[in-house]
Length: 470
Image 1 (cartoon, rainbow, N blue to C red):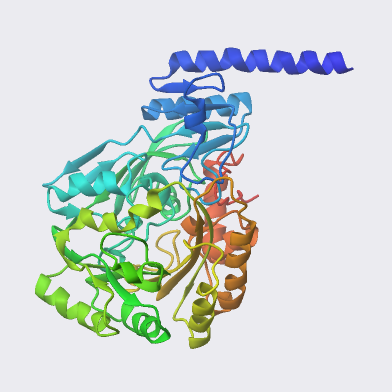
Image 2 (cartoon, rainbow, N blue to C red; image 1 turned 180 degrees about the vertical axis):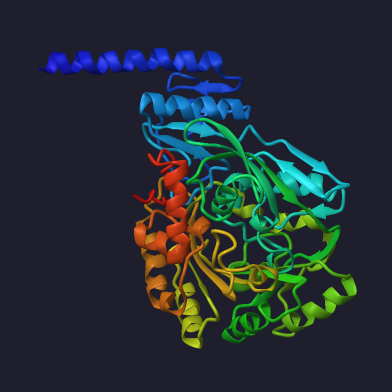
């Protein structure tokens, strides 16, 4: 019996090896297997918690490669994982015993300045797009870190630095090329497969692999932005929350309650002190931007004020730290506000962090985001005024993450009653209930029906999974 089992396993491995070699011969890109010199690098992601061993990695060069890989995985009955930027909090980018389609090499960005349109492959990052678009005085509101891949960012919604003025990344999506579960390649837009187009705008990677996005760009040349660092007091947090959602729509802010890093622009005696780092992006005139920032500057004597005119891509220098490899424990929610009790709980927790890199992020929403109908896209939390995220970070791969997760969970238990919903891009592996939090019932049911049409066998299930309806 042992021998028979061994023979069966050996036969399967030999058959798979033969099939992989046939796949390799047909790819324009690269096939990386466990015996490849590139395998160790290919299986790693920016998340240091990820230590996975896939069957193989297809570093796709074209949508043809993606189609071949999807078809191969189905024929061989191998689980399929998709990697864009590799930032998946739920560790879905690289999976044990799966075939990983790595899109990081597909990062071409083409700008049509006359039409104000960008054609962007999914491996391109926010930074990859911001630079070329900025050369023409154009921009797209994308994620808050330059290294995040456009594939995962966009399909989850894309709450970015200009969300109050220009909406989500998906609100500026005109079309997408999609490889479906059967390997076919289609275009999704308002006029072609509109059901699929609706679903990929917020429904994550459940419906296929997007190989190119077509975005409408906004005329954004110089912004008034940077970092305003204030002492972290209850009054400052209360004042920020009161103003962030009522400010003129040209002003979008992301605020991080964190410990001042040992950066050159931080006074030495303030390093390690608890501060509120507000990252504003104002898209109107500089003069009006100064007026819009005045209420925030009036909240307290700034520790540092680095807000000034700058090209839009420069805003990413203030979040460079997030691109470093790290582990994270994260919980997020939407709300209309935070109560004084919630602010007290947050400040109290930050006095006893499990790591010096802990932070609580507050984002003022509203504006253009709220002007789109709730059910116009699969991203549905458009009426929320605030997004709160507890983000506990550690940098040592050998470090036990359990104390950091416990700290996050303890604070989450105290404040989660203040809000509802979830941003799908900020979900870890948190269970079916939290996926349901990300989508209202009407939205979820529609996604499940579209899933049943385009992916009835749930080939694309390493994501915040929407199961196909019966």
